[in-house]
Length: 141
Length: 141
DNA sequence: ATTTATTTTCAAAAAGTTTTGAAAATTCGA
DNA sequence: TCGAATTTTCAAAACTTTTTGAAAATAAAT
Image 1 (cartoon, protein in one colour):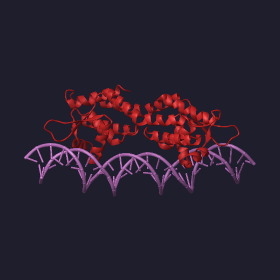
Image 2 (cartoon, rainbow over the protein chains, first blue to last red):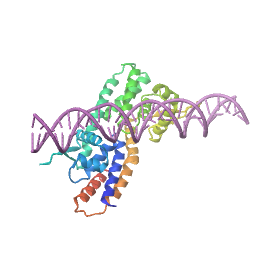
Image 3 (cartoon, chains in turn blue, yellow, green, cyan):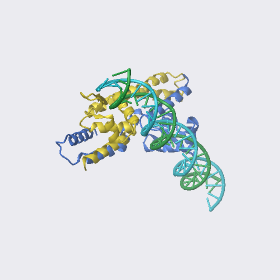
């Protein structure tokens, strides 16, 4: 298999993979492209390579930056912005886990704290099952 | 807070939570409802409680069964099927991790094996970055 | 064998999400 | 300060996923 074909396949399946993990296809594809690119790329490079619109490219690059997975690189003497992805995969995974904790798990745990305090007789099996379920989920956090 | 309100809130946020994890809202809501229900429920119980259609209920119960998170319970002398969820949250988490590995990670790793064998000069930085990225992702699996 | 209860299927509709592209805003150099 | 390059925004369009509901299939009782 040639490099170009391999790259296309990698980008395409990384995109599909992402959609199973709450990450949209384009965001995952841009990330994949930057992961396998030795040098930083511009917005136009990414648009051309992935054949997507300027708006879409821009929004998803910003999102990757918010997630801490991509950083803006300013090359001396260049007006355009360049972008590059963190290449250490362990760091990438740790960063994703950290962000998802902050964005999704913590708000859920806060809700569970409130829900655990539901009124009612603990001998009522409906109340008991509810409270027990909530507490055991909280223990995961 | 009253039990009923707490239950509604739990179901609703579990549903929203699920959508960030590649699980559809209804499937997550049914799962939440069964988690906090002390006794098994019928399809009609679930339809009424969540206010969703019969088809939707049926499909998502089947899906939960495929994922190994819910089981069908036959009560003696009852014609209807009842459903109940695994209550041990650790078992639930382990089961979800196991299924996602099987469904998503393994196919991705298989592809990576093929991609690692891309042709080309390893001294070319494009080839090198590609191969290195693929290998380091493989190490996660 | 027929009726009735129950479950399953699936095409079409509804809802939700992503993408586009053109206009607005911003940035930088002359 | 002005003009060109670049980035950002966002309403509308395209696409994707989910949901509905009625019909078909199945299972059980009489």
